[in-house]
Length: 136
Image (cartoon, rainbow, N blue to C red; front, side):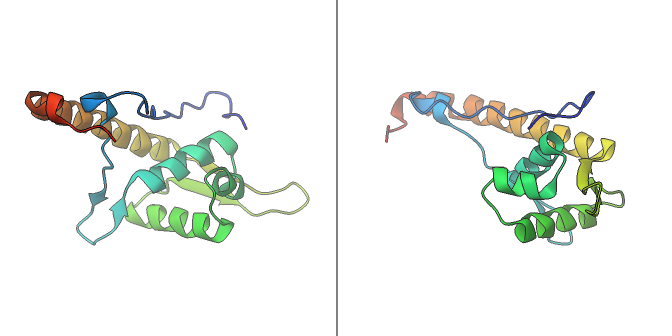
């Protein structure tokens, strides 16, 4: 499963399970829009997977979700904005597919930047307490 040529899809780093204290912290950022629509890590992971695979069903499989669930989430994110984040073509002889639009790539990149800035703020604010963060 490869990204299409010229496609840049950021992939968030996973926290190191062996790390301790502040290095283990990882935000789970959920942005709630005024109409109660939510954009969070699950939808962003799905959008990134669509960007890598070129398929809603393959992206869903990669993330362990049904095609229906993946399609419902894609429909939800497309309805959050006036422009689509994902475009899809139906199957048939040529096969179907889905593409992350330029606008969708921009939204994903913006979300990941906000997530990184949030993590920086968390680490900065919790630094005085880092030695007291209990291990698991």
